[in-house]
Image (cartoon, rainbow, N blue to C red; front, top):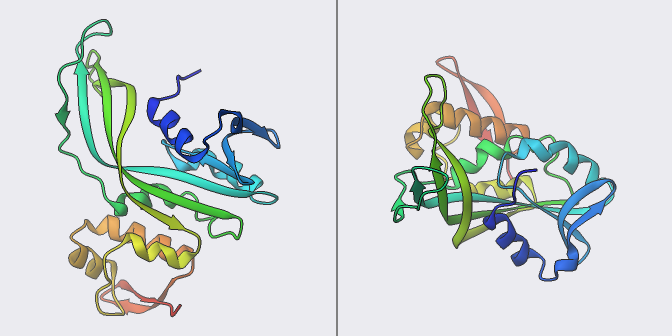
Length: 222
């Protein structure tokens, strides 16, 4: 069984103060914590892994899914499993709320739901890594030993489909294409297409026509 990361332990302590309310079983599932009658599931990895679990639990329980989005990262790397970690260095990769859509899209067959809330945390973390022998077809050149929470920058609570608006910059003039979004937001076209799919799936955007073979979208009135 994979060892629980320090980050996961820290978040459980934040959301459930009593250790007796952590790591409990409900309806055959192991739940990270229970607080005031709400089941709390903290998910560092992909949300697709808990989609079916959440779909079952919300039928009879209030559920809060907590998903950290890494905004900044300090890396400590060692050359061997028995070596010492080098002093931390800042990762050049930076995350933002837009990155949340990579994971949220896996829950949009469950969300929105009256008994489901999703809290996103924009966090800074420290990550320990051990280098491994690089093989030709191996994509990663390291293993992750542990992750620790450094700070929570911001929080966003999603209760309804309209709450997704908090995660994106202002829209360009409506109606717009995903190309218009990509230009206005400074993101790749495929990122804008993914976000448009998410808003359309939850019913807050609707296609209203075409412009040069691209779909035109119009946000629905709240």
